[in-house]
Length: 318
Image (cartoon, rainbow, N blue to C red; front, side, top):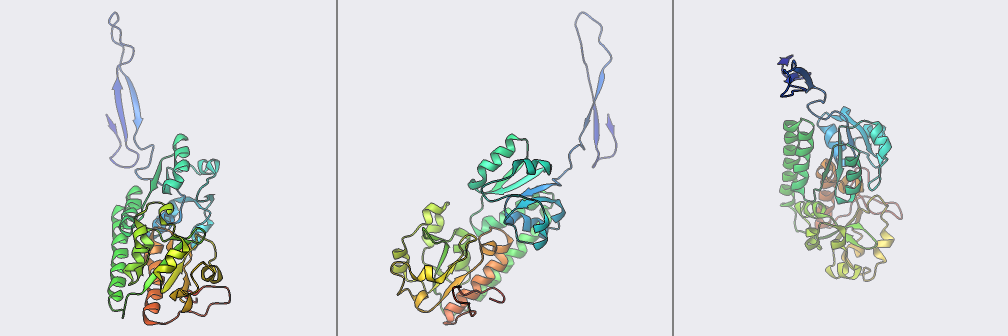
């Protein structure tokens, strides 16, 4: 029989026959109570091993459900007050278990070992693996669905998509499409991951290494500096995975002295927390900075007044 109203705290009672023997009379059925409300209908204690799911949950109004974050998290600022439980490749498993998560969210094959260990310890884990802009929007929707906020997440993804459409419309009005190079690392020289390449072209640039974005891993996006120099980008955008990019290291590469971007001083930096996390930041502030950079190169303008040793920046106040 059922006890209680449907919804939270629902309990069902089942009767089973215990101890039956063909040589004896049946015993009285023993009731067994199964508490279907022992777990919440949706996860309430979420650990996020990367930045983008933290920002997504906060934008959905579910920041209170985040109980642990990566040590690299910066968006939103209040998330930095949450317990830090991981880097990108390592995690404090005991600390995570102490937080009693009912869901852990991670990203890519690089966190597969972390996910496997947590699963072995009985923790529910979901690893995302988005690479394209379309997959980022899908990941936003899926993040919301996992915590029972599917409708809200669909609305957020729709707003992000409409923002991208506006940037594409503005790009159509540029006087030309400049040749651009996005670099994710300097030694070896690695071109931008797929969503960076797609966003670069969305805002009006021509990615000189666009063919490499089909590669799922970084190994397929390594280029000899001389080859990129041969393609002669007019603008360079550097985001060195959390390390400060330096103009002297770019211009000193073999064959780069005559590269148009170096000659015209069109060397820019975008912080990795803005453009290299596959979530809302890349589709808002990240694409906004890319759009300002590409527009400046297309018009023959330069942004910002960098201090000596710094690259130019399209960030506010840069």
